[in-house]
Length: 185
Image (cartoon, rainbow, N blue to C red; front, side, top):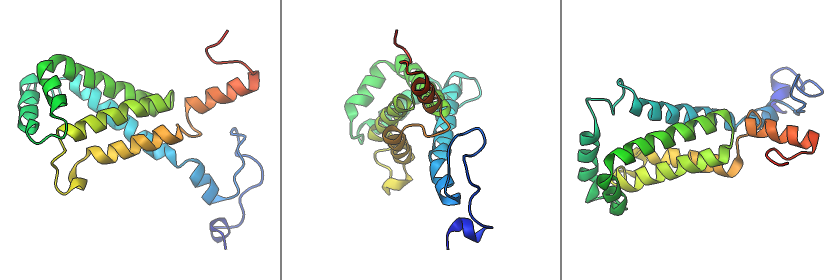
């Protein structure tokens, strides 16, 4: 017995209104939208982290400025898997802090909107990987470190794309209908 039969019968025939997408039941519909929660979580989280860095109410506000970041990086340098990344950040703390915040905002916005999702996911994956190789490398057990789940989520989006409720999909559908390239002549 299928899931849709258990909750009241087969799925309604035809596409969902306004989507043009046919579903064979609840299970197929859920699978169709499976990437949406991941996109929302990663997009909101990274957008918030980036904005948080530039505002006065976040952890990198006046109370935790470049000095605090430098102390954190110096503390993690001896145990980091990539100490050269820590050295690079310590050599240019302002550029590093602002660059990370801008990259977080960019990754968050792109993933959240589903526009150039794979590019946003690649930026998020690189950020998460660099955080893991520097600051959270020594988390024990490893699953206490927060950067690996973010990395896994971004790699999933990098491989799968934005899914059905994304601007990428909408633009691809429009290009397919008109037969034109998005940025071409």
